[in-house]
Image (cartoon, rainbow over all chains, first blue to last red; front, side, top):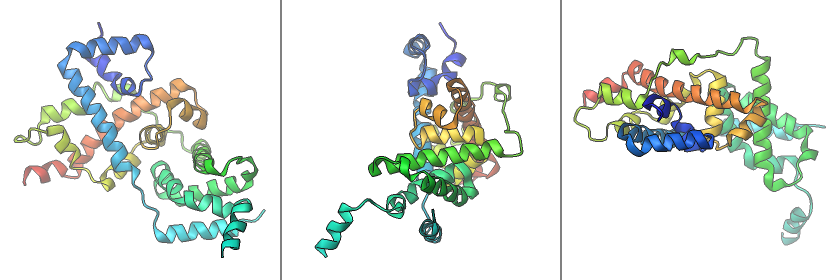
Length: 77
Length: 197
């Protein structure tokens, strides 16, 4: 059985489904009985959603758009 | 008017017509990867795309194609940077867990949604500042995976790194991000501001 520290270290990969099947099974077994690590897992998911939400909106300022469009228009072979 | 529209549909799109709709997405990616150098990075990607436009087989896949070119350009910049990339040892983190840190420090004693309240302290500018404070080698896989949605194998291919290296960078990047969120909240007084409400 793996420790809480081992389980926590692998939670994001567990969510990402990038763990090897054996490691995934061990984390799953640990989560089945460890309430603390289930809290960590929920938080890891929350943090992923938070990161996507807060970092995805990057607006293209009008003056930058204008400069980039001019740059494209001036490209020559 | 109709003839003009038909003529546009019959001819291949110009380079400008292909890339212009993709500019907002490209710029957003570049901001996350390169911060203040975003515009310059987009220009470099556009120049590369212009030279390689013959490789684009399907105009409908232009967004993905341009995104890959932008990531390649960023990767090349990282490689040619004079400074060695800042590597962070896992020993620096100990077993830091933001989840436990928030629970232990308990910045909102009367809250029954402690962790959500902590994340509610951060606006988009705050998260941008935290991300841009991370070393590039950790920030890039983190944003490509969790914001832009690239699979880890795809990130490894685009950054020309072994998959194991990307997985290790992602792990460190996540830990760094967690610790940096806490440190940022402390240094910017977000916790005290909230507590004094």
